[in-house]
Length: 262
Image (cartoon, rainbow, N blue to C red; front, top):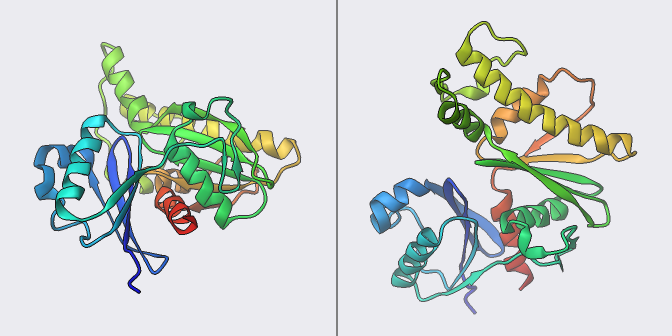
């Protein structure tokens, strides 16, 4: 009997990511920027996304416009069912800390599922994308709750839009190799250093809070800026003994857990 090929989609605010699940293993990972998909439509996906799939599972926090266009493309190119994952109060080993499950972004929930499947003990899942989200799950799968703050580009663009004499600096594409200090000697660096250190400070504060409560969490970083901040945190200015684990496809991995469970 032929095993159904399952296509998994993490549809975020900036990127559409996908992975093909075949024989219970992830293959053919890829991504495209949302703006490229909206500008070029289906032509941008035809050569990228695997076809011949019988099942599609999506996790979306993007606009309805993107969801609708993607669904149309998939149905036109495959004979498949499409399932949209929604946040649940209790499932897959996670018991949500929110009173109203619909208030927690589905991408955060799916990322926690993946992290709890891969790591034992207490975990902190930090998604460094358009927004930064921080979620903590204890060793028993109880979600303590979370935090949301602007991501790096949102912080920078807010200064550009809301101040008359501060303009958005040109950010190197290789920010991961940029030396971030506390004190800058020019305005462009002051903006970048301030935004980066603010995000690092929020992460360190969350970790410190747990450590002071006698927890030793595994810290998992995902999202588009995860590698940037992994390098920054390694060069941090605190004495915390923390290992930062980078999982760039954590949401896709969570969708694989869900697909393999059903």
